[in-house]
Length: 196
Ligand code: FES
Image (cartoon, rainbow, N blue to C red; front, side, top):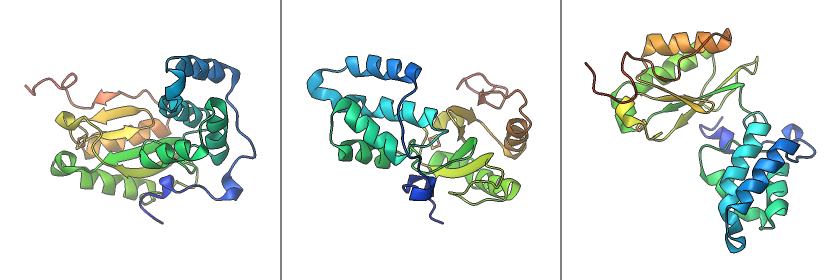
């Protein structure tokens, strides 16, 4: 399986037959669309894709791409090109907890390879795969923009920073057991303050 398999459009058997925003999400979407001039409707595509992905368990189906294209009256290819370009959009099903390990240089120098290997071993999956119970999926991403807190792992919409093998192992256990999790630095420091 490719390392970028969540960026590959899911096969037809996995695609829902239809897609439309829930009533709450439609209100959100309309408010977003209103923020842009009518000749720059394309600017709303990214936030609309995020709403679609959140509504559809973490991935964007083909029908959502068609739906957004119809909603703002732009060619489907405009929506598709953004959905395929940005790593934050998944085009095939992910686990309930989608783990993305940053492996760009600062995180690599701070041990991201070990974090990736820990996830693979603990979850029994490779990059681009989902566990049999559909709880976890694993991806590898470029810089998440939080290098000062390297190494960094993103799980769904949250960042977990200053991680090490012990804290990542515990974090995965906590997600699995539905226990309280600490978002942000897993070290003693707050935000990106200097280490004491
Ligand atoms: S290199 Fe990992 S957050 Fe920037």
